[in-house]
Length: 180
Image (tube, rainbow, N blue to C red; front, side, top):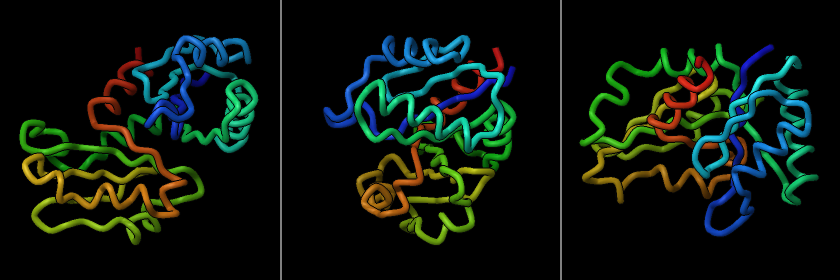
């Protein structure tokens, strides 16, 4: 059995695609995924499956969610090994000053790579920093100047359809859940 996290895009945001976490968990379990657990309302599901091959598994989950909840589901899937690499390969000091900075991980949906995504991600000197990682980008912004951050520009770009963002605390919590 392989432990995965499904990061759902675009649910429970701005009143759109409202899905209760109990219903989401039940949907995963009803479709043969084991030990499904959700974390916060933004659509994070940790589960186990005998199936491997993230592209096929991602398509299966997207189809399952679209059918169950009636929305065009988009999922970024990571197994435990991939999530551990994302956390372990964060830039030095990433997440270390939560009172001064906001830290986010931009998860990239395959086939988008960090190298390609970095070409579209703009930063404002003295406010933002972005760094490539394994299947993700690490984005930090100065809390005192967060309103000047360019992170909000990403969501209006076409490339954003191949991304989903989780804060550092959520990312590390999901890894702990996967390793429990």
